[in-house]
Image (tube, rainbow over all chains, first blue to last red; front, top):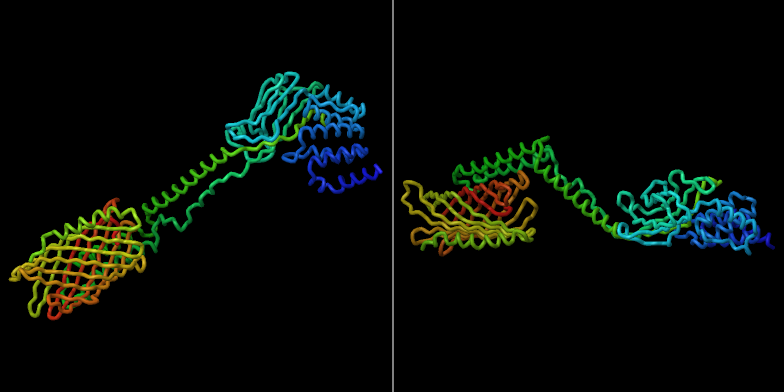
Length: 355
Length: 217
């Protein structure tokens, strides 16, 4: 009966990995524990690693992660994978240095591996208080770093690519220290949402008790609730810009009204007062209008700069740029004032002995 | 009876200026200006031909609301007969009031009365002509210089007392240029009007110089 159940679990876990991925970390943990209890160790190890690999909002809680790691240690011992069992036990110690495997649940070999891991694991731990929402710049996300020795360490927030976003601590870690991150990067700006981590590593080649290097990693997921921002105005359309150089049609538009009006003023008196001899006043005005039209034509002749249009276009661009800068500044203010949600995951330890 | 000297002109200016200044920053636009003109009047009555010249001073204003417009003008002066004539000088008072519609950005249509009164010794000769006008505008330099031409014809009219039927037609045109960066404009204009009634014909030509506050329309 147990074999049938184990076979079923194995089929579910190994043949339908997509289904397993879609399951929650807690469900994977329960299945992994059940697989261990029916001695289906290969499937159990796979399920427990999947559960521990989940990050973000669906990740295991610290207590669940500790349970998963102790069962993973036991499973690897049962599979005769001693090195893997040691790695899992060290992760458990980093996660919760005070955790003790239940001697009534696990065989003496598991307890022995755990004790060995305790002796060889670096004496550092990291503990976050859970999901936290802070205002970047004015509030802080706090992580407690602890150690029973006094190693020289550095701690930094890194992004998914491993690039340092902000250094949090450099120095000797005595007993414990609270790392406070205000949610800003090194240049004082809030980093974009995504996956980050707090990486703690020894300085000056800081070595573990067994002589290897180590890196303590606390995964973080940064999220930001959507903020109402004003969309940036589009640039002024080409139709609003005036030509900065004279062209043929513009020159003609300046010339034609002047010439037509000038000629009309000279000729119209002959139509209005046919029997009268009009004075020369019409020639003065008609001539002035025609000359003005010609002057306007010359000022707009093809290729000629049009300073008024240049000023107009410059003002148009500058007004738009001012608007964009002002709206960008307001949007940035709103972004800065919005809360940053930080979700810590289960910490992990990587040592030079990790297979 | 002589018209009160310059009184009408002063009253017109005084009435137009505050309204113009108040209206500039609202939806209504208003222009107001002063006009000085040199006028030539050729008068034909039967076989008698007279020619007068003289200076005319006046004021004008335009109220503009989207497509509708109102235009008023007032002027007065003294017309002196040409040398060698034994005709007496005339005091002249003229005015007009038109309602207009902007048919297109460059063409406006106007309608309204145009009046002119001469005082010769103790008698008066009054012309009242109802006209329809079309004004075309063209821009030479945007915001700096523009030109215009206006044509009109009489719809009806009368002259004298008792009134006899009168008619006429006319035209005007000119150049408007902005004076510096302020909203003052200068206008050089030419106007000719030919009015007639039974046995009577008058042709009035005017060369005008105006200074206008607000964009001329």
